[in-house]
Image 1 (cartoon, protein in one colour):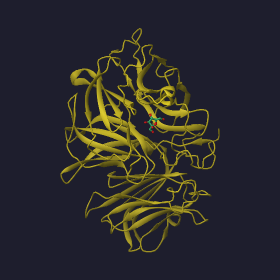
Image 2 (tube, helix red, strand yellow):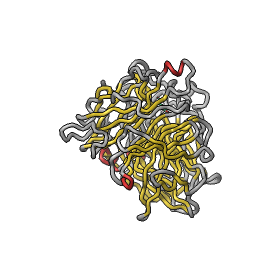
Image 3 (cartoon, protein in one colour):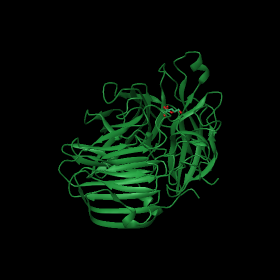
Image 4 (cartoon, helix red, strand yellow):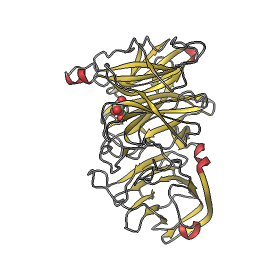
Length: 482
Ligand code: FRU
């Protein structure tokens, strides 16, 4: 494969061909990052779900691996997680080999067609060869459905204080926590959230983990939602609070979004990475994921992002930034200083012909109206910027090329700014058909995809009132698709 097809991302993970949705089973083990994903090898639209598989040692270059899990008599293989069972609590380990255990939802279409309400159940599988091959447990399912139609996407972590596994499960309009000593015998601990957060759709793909902030532990509960996102369709919300092995107690009742753009969904974090939390999402939206104009494959993952906490006024908020591994694929870079933009400024006049993929970092002393424009000579463009009057970041893809495959695609999307009267910074990671924006140290994040009829080859900066950019760094990114 040349990976040179129109719209093929050059620095983002994509399947060689066919349909992909959620990232699954993200686990780091023996120096390798595993990425499994919702995969249908039969078409470029959703179908009987498998777990596709890829591996990486640097989170940037991915090796495709054989399909890890196939549908079976218990159903399709829906989303879930994977853990390193270091203490062999499951008993799957043989001759000292540490088992990797995958915990996923079996989605039984026969039960679904019959109108049953218990067709989603949790099952497990294990690998004794570092994730290469997987054996499903003979006693599946390990957690039976009590009669809740949406009962899926188990994310499992080890809770050391009580030496038990904790499963965070999406159960329709709430999260249900379960625990087990051995990954097999699950018991219900508590429920959370039916009256908190956003409920414009069903809760899916949750995640629970602690983050450290100034030596204090805060628990993050990620809950993906479809539909009901801040800019339409699917999106990722989160809650902060405390977790005691049984109950999650929120410290704040506001609805928070990890990414305000329309095209980050089902995002969760890697397991077994210590204090570091690496987040990856599916770079699409259920509104139009099966209609986007790529021919051979559908959808990419976001770049990996490190999550952290930042205090704003009296609240802690989650911040995301491109994982440091991204700098390893940076090549030529140009740093500009004190750029006074009073009329449209073409970046190529200072850095030479721009190339995509690239990364742009900029900062200024105070907030100001501006936009960064990706364009081609057909007048197609994507604008990324800040609207000072409304204190909002925005991405406008109204005139981005092919937009007519879905009525809500051509739009301008916004994200709030959380800082006031202070310095402003922005990082853009631009690929052939996507942009990821991280503003104010990653407090405001937006991910958007686009499909120009000719590749964008120009980057310019505009500002109605004029803007002084203190520093701008432009860096080419090397394709990882070799
Ligand atoms: C989220 C989701 C999950 C489900 C999977 C099915 O995008 O709907 O809830 O497990 O996709 O492919």
